[in-house]
Image (cartoon, rainbow, N blue to C red; front, side, top):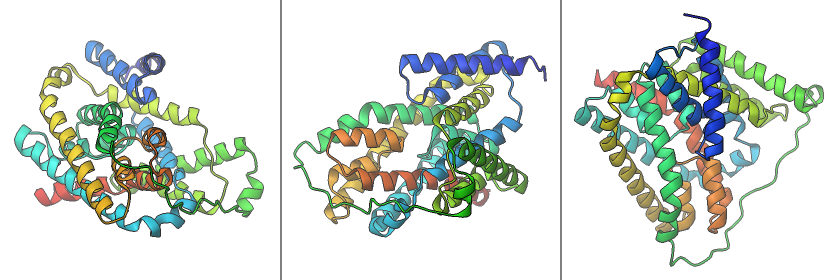
Length: 355
């Protein structure tokens, strides 16, 4: 490995992030850096990132997912148990059905097929794909187009589907936040200390997960470790620049796997992308129809809650259309946790059973 290639790859990744942010693309730190490094890799073959970066990125990604869950969210689970279980079962079935369809129809390896269809974060699922020996560049492209399509089309789709729905006074969930006063809170009492503590914890958990041999263990151990601390103390904190740095690293990792052969096969992804998007729209409608007919959620909130986009993105859009933001947030947060923590194990089980 030429050590000069690593800083050069990072420079290209940062440049891609800056350009992506100025162009207004979704998740520019991940997508912008991935596209820039991918182009650089395919055209020169010089893009290189050390394997240790994968563990670091997974650790930080897991920490951010774990920190997204609050004590308030956990208290609200009993109120949202039925729609949450139904949504996770439907998403799992959809992923398995599409994964086997892509494997049998298009000749993809089964792990790549399954991870391409997981409704998770782009960085999280792409890093997991590298851990599970899937085609990370294909997974990243599928995940990127899914997110971009959801953000571009689903708001209009939801507005059309609920055009005759009256405004609803939503029954509020528990919005109180318990203040904690543990010994950690008294010691780690500044944003700088909390950031350092969370970074060290996430990296340590990620290293333990990596050495454990558990598939996607770095992300999973960090998610569980930091998530548990976040529910029991107020000592966890990481500013957004840290998340963006991890996304840039993840984007450069995935981009460095792109080859001229990858680029030549891009046209073959059009069919799977269309099939995946249509299936997600059908799932979105079916879940929302059942949830609204059974009184679990109103139609508008159900459509947003089951949209396979980013939790924060969908919440911002939902606020403009009068949906129930608290219930949407609970379902979207636990959907993201399930996608990162459980679905890789489900995919691995499917591959092993398929033989």
